[in-house]
Length: 107
Image (cartoon, rainbow, N blue to C red; front, side, top):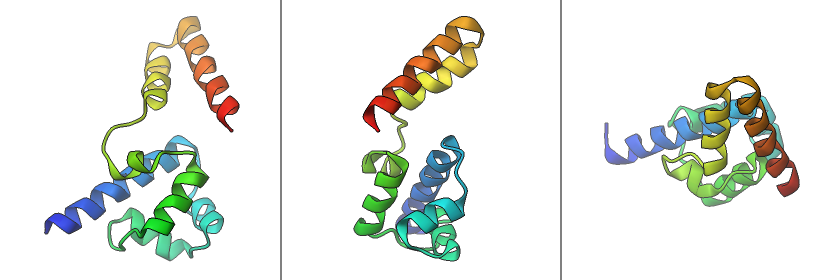
C-alpha cells in the first residue's frame, strides 16, 4: 500500500468515525453534500480521493473541523463526550449534557 493509499484510508476511517459518532448513515452525508452513496462510500473506504471542496462540504455538514477529518486526533469535545459515557452515572450524564449544550450553542 502506498503512502497516498494509506492516507486516503486514514481519512476514510476518520470520516466513518465522525459520521457514526453523529448517528448518521452514509446516505445522509452523501445526500447533504451532493454525492451518490456509492461515491461517498468509496471515500470512506479510501478508494476515492477527497477533494478540498468535498472535504469542506463534509466538514460543514458534520460540524467538524477539516483537520479532524484529515488528522488523527478527535476534538476535545469528542474526547470529553467519550469520557463522560465511559464514566457513566450521574457525573457522566452531567458531563455529557455539558458537551451537548456546547454543541447546540455552536449550531
